[in-house]
Amino acid sequence: MAFGCGVLISSLSIDLMTEAFELSKKIYLISIAFLLGSVTFIGGDYFIDNIGGEERKSTSQTPSPDAEKPTSGNAILLGTLLDGIPESLVMGSALAAGGSSGIVFVIAVFLSNFPEGISGTIAMKNSGMSKVKILVIWLSMIVATIAFTIIGFLFLGNASQEFKSFAMAFASGAILAMLSDSMLPEAFKEGGNTTGLFVSAGFLVAFILTNLS
Figure 1 (cartoon, helix red, strand yellow):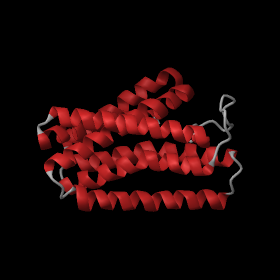
Figure 2: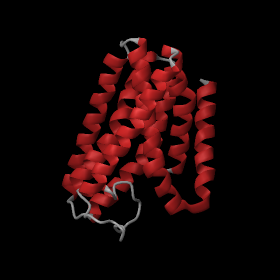
Figure 3: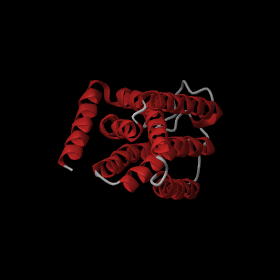
Figure 4: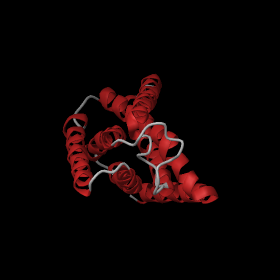
């Protein structure tokens, strides 16, 4: 999880935000979009936590004793969609734009989503859900992710420079908020002082991939 965070941080800072600025050259537009993305994610995350999705990124085999509400499979699905939709839209638009940023971002999303998927499955099992229902939820998530990636590829790829710049900065803000609010705290909780090392390693790998490409 920490390694995936490092890769995503590198991809956001070196590829997406830089590309967003180059598309519009309007720092105020990018700043507003970035902050809106962060606020939107934090607001949605707060709502989902309060309806039972608080444990969706926890890698613990047992529910947290601090959780005030029981884990809900539907809330986990909503939370995963909240995390995945900005990533999927940006993946599609980055692939449509071409260049190395799209490929690096796809790698970054895969590396971050893999441990998230494991964590979500643990949380759903802890809530008493059947294996069949868990599989149906993840298959629904896969379909939704593919659909939003295609939407990003078809519509954002051909959108105006300013709109594409706004969308990429908005998604960057949402993803960075997600990393800071959910993934990094959980990674540190389970990994302790090694977390920073893996985040740095992930950042460096993405940086190398970007520049080699």
